[in-house]
Amino acid sequence: MSKQKSITELIKDAAKKSKVGAYNKEDATHKRKVAWPLDCNIGPGLEGATACETKIGYINGARGQMIYRGYDIFDLCANSTFEEVSYLLQNGNMPSEKQLNAYKKKLTEYRSIPNTLRTLLGFEIENMHPMAALRLGTNLMRHRLTWKDSDSARPLAEEAIAADEDSIPMETQPYGEKHAKYEFKKHKTGRPADVRTTTDDGESRDTCIRLISGTATLTAAIARIREDKLPIDPDPTLGHAANFIYMMTGRKPTKEEERVMDVCLILHADHGMNASTFASLVVASTLSDIYLSIGAGIAALSGPLHGGANEAVIKMLEKIGPAKNVEAWFKKKTKKKEKIPGFGHRVYKAYDPRALILAPLAKRLTADEHGEGSVFDTANKLEDLVVKTLGKEKGIYPNVDFYSGLVYRSMGIPDAMFTPIFAVSRVSGWTARITEYLQNNRIFRPRAAYTGDFGKKYVPLKKR
Ligand SMILES: CC(C)(COP(=O)(O)OP(=O)(O)OC[C@H]1O[C@@H](n2cnc3c(N)ncnc32)[C@H](O)[C@@H]1OP(=O)(O)O)[C@@H](O)C(=O)NCCC(=O)NCCS
Image 1 (cartoon, rainbow, N blue to C red):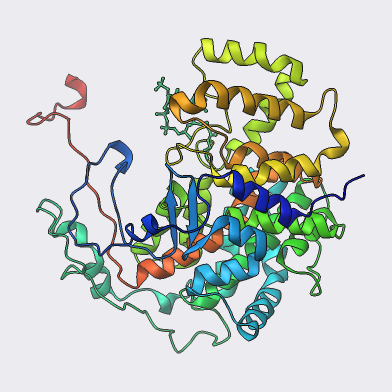
Image 2: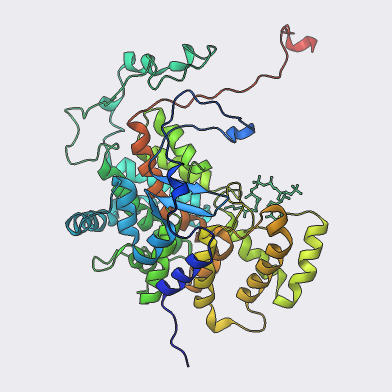
């Protein structure tokens, strides 16, 4: 019998299948100086608009290319860890051994949030959507860890007026200045003298690390509370991915499961100016704090058009049943012009590199179940059919959500937790982008085209 390939080898094989390959000269032409204001064609929902500059991540949808800070996603998944990648996103460079150890030490320290969990247990978590519970949890972290709620931390009245930019340039033409005159730069409320010095300021790098670590603990606790079980303390000897599985399921993962979860966390860490990243930046741009900004990201990610598709995929595959049913099911769907969850992407018109990586991992982890009636075989058959019929014609290929659910399920993770796992990883991208954006902050303020009436006269209630 031939030796089974390692997860790294499977990822390297997937890289060969992608159109991208190694860095090529064409990539350098995408690096350009941005001269504001920009001319761009903007569609509804800000489609096509460029909102800011970033050095964090890059996606080329035509080539199926995805990059964090200059490193290709296949390279990172094959060789790196979530700890390294989240450090990279936050700091812009790969850590030295010493830097990585210091970063891991902080993650370990911040993974334990007993006060927050105790407060969380006072709510009806079992009756809440897990994303709503997670949003509540990050808010409770803020409450417990920052001094932001103290009376003396409120902005001064004159600062509040200065921040109300709406009243000033709303109806003027945008000039595209990097800093508007009315915006107060380097804003810091400063820690009031009467608050504890041990608390977080809600704005620093440490806040980001607290959130990256704490979101995993919160998500694991929510999964357990939903099953009527108590949260489990993190194990300081385990890394981020292994701890996450352990705190959620109560069992130490195998090396392979740990590696696969690590890859999943790397894959979901950042992805351009998607809805949840934008939502978190919008909140941060008001000079709110990072905890509340992350809450906005979690809220946006919870929607079925964004982070919720992986759960829909599993439901669909179960509904289809064995692989032999796929063809008839697909015919019916295409006749009704219905969209198939887990396929298509606003940016990718080639194979989503994340799906290319996850497909062989899902296959490996579900190997025991292959054969008549296996969910993986149904997925595989559906992928073949969709790619054959819609791939070339419309650029419809599997996206990240198509195989991720199968991977999580194989580790005993309940379906309702798939989207929160997305957040556990994406919090590293959200925090990195918030920190970057705040260096040149400009409050987000697009406009809406008014298509309503003018000149209407108020009619008293009784005369209407
Ligand atoms: C992700 C998504 C919202 C992107 O949509 P979009 O870029 O706005 O693409 P459009 O809705 O304009 O679709 C373009 C064409 O492809 C088709 N298409 C898009 N996604 C499809 C899918 N999942 N299944 C079948 N056809 C699809 C559309 O019907 C449309 O066909 P038409 O030109 O004949 O009308 C969309 O592909 C989708 O809803 N996918 C399923 C949900 C999902 O998996 N979401 C997670 C994304 S990570």
